Length: 439
Image (cartoon, rainbow, N blue to C red; front, side, top):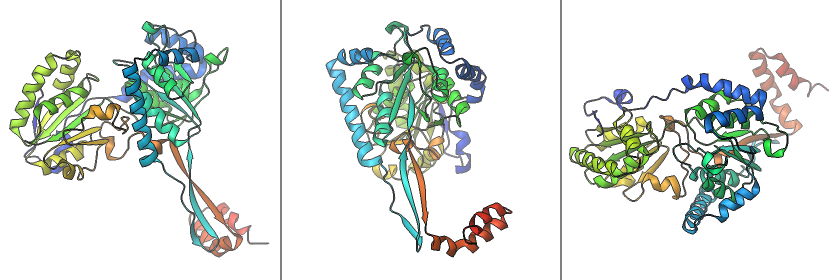
């Protein structure tokens, strides 16, 4: 089912061209997205209603979900599902509190009377997007809301596409999680138009159809959501341009082929563009995984979607000489999710430089991180893990330097600053120092 890519004879410099990757042309989607974003900016609520009817085939009574709908969704939750939601929230919040929170720095005295410190300040208002395409990703509510709350964001809004089967409201599980998390500003708006609504703000005839602009937009979405985030970046802050999900598994002969096959299939279930890549030095494992996939895919609900993902060019089994070369491959690939299923998996994982999240050993499948491990599942894709991080408390915080100099401290440095400014042909900069000592 998975094609074989043999890189055993490839030099390190050629690995980037050899490893599989999906086509995800955000620039091509911009042509469709720019008119949508411009219409929302110019026509506000009218445009949002127009695009709801066109793309979601339902126009919600109001853009903002009523408080009673949020409460009803939470009240109607199945008890077992409520328990699962609460446990996921608890674990994600604990990791945010104990592993991700940054504190302001102590002042650094660079000279007598010259102090610089760093203050950590949360973003003021954020818009969190929750997809509702192939599957209503209620887990994304937790992954967006909890770190924003722990960062101290004072104003949080959530947007998710309206669903015709639920009377123009987002999926009840999404609404229930918002209620459990104490988020009461929820909008039944999806796609690029939701990003535009957050970026520009809209004013309707009453509060239920109005959304003040936000400072930052976060959360995953389809290619049109990503294109809107790219187009509106600068008007509003964004977390990242998330593409189709991807899993890479570095495994040797000690790995259980059933585990490996199940984990590859789990991410292929997301999208026909999802990538599933096994990197191994074991032909025995590779053959066993192929056999396991054949039977598993036939027996699962979304078999057509999964089969398309696994047989497309972004998915493959990459054969390597040994685990050392396997590490070169996965560090070059920089996967969103990387599993290590090898002998001494923890030691191998410690040598990984580039991955959105690393899952160590046979008992840490990606599905665990998708829901309840306590880690984030909003992660960099398309190789961006070599320079970017997943969504965390840090994503919602800004570092602000505070400069506090006495008169003597400034005058001691005045000659140096003036010389520097004049060397850059900026005499006005130098003058801002000079006027302070020519009294």
